[in-house]
Image (cartoon, helix red, strand yellow):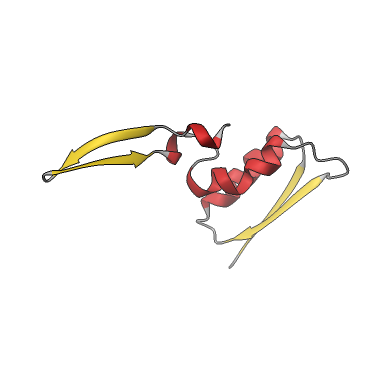
Length: 83
């Protein structure tokens, strides 16, 4: 995943022309701010790391991305949510 290569699309809406940087298209599991948040971990070797632990709300899509990262890196994961 190359964060510098997020596509830029051109749009026209209500008389305005604008460009939109599409970080939502970077990766199926890592998009938007999560792509930038987890990019270093995704691209690095993690010697000595065996488990990832995440915490957030039950609706936090960052936990889904963290679980995908753990699966890609073949790490165990524990995710905790507020009641």
